Image (cartoon, rainbow, N blue to C red; front, side, top):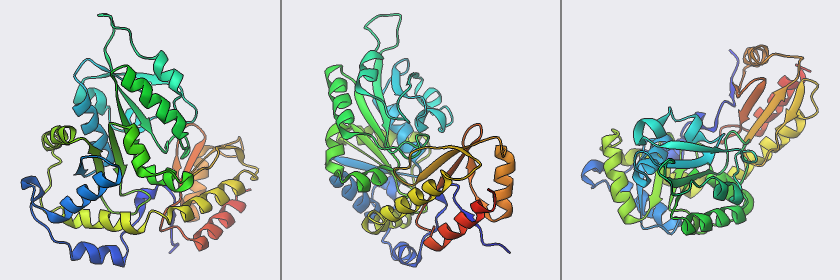
Length: 341
């Protein structure tokens, strides 16, 4: 049987022995009653890391984003985000379903909006238009190929938001991938955004969970919304322990994922079946196929060789490196791809 190399996402990782040991030894309570000490430790740690007053542990990044949208807005208001953003494309229409808001889509650069695009898309105070209320940025950008925002653009967008009575949320599912590349600090981001969502089950390798940070009043409201959405969890300290371990041990090693992704992206750019490889900044490689292969045929051939990837648009393929992807696997990936040229 072929040992599969799974590059579909960085969500496919499994807890290692050290993480499992931490989980099994976790002290737990009932988090809905607010007495799970391991969850409290995680929430306090993450709030402090970003210079925020409070934090809320949730099952998924979709939930942290959707809770944030609901807490920040009222039905009939409008949200500004990039046309490629996860919160718009991959959260099941949650903005409309949960919050009753409309969305103003911006065509940014690989998922990254510019300050003037925000300013130009704020609606006038006119009864014919929804009230612009919230701006959402995604860093790194999934559909942008793991692209990283220039922090100066985020600072300028934050200034525009404050001057126009808008709130600013960060979908930072892969924020630590950005931070290890730029050297910027979590507290720098905490000063820019009203709320920040970070995922533990992507590059950081925990099995489940995301965190939402913000002010005490915001998190109090968010906790009520989480309950309504069915996100209240009981002895969830076992999962919070995995997240604590991930934050303590798996951030700096993200550089290894980036190194392997850049090497793979560089190799792909020379292959005769490639039309284009998007610039690789972090752990996501997105490339377009030329006429040599259809997307379905290419993915089928990869599967037959034990290499898993996903389609990511017409003739586009996405591969994502992660902590379970080794240098040996990288060499085998390259050999498989060479066989298709």
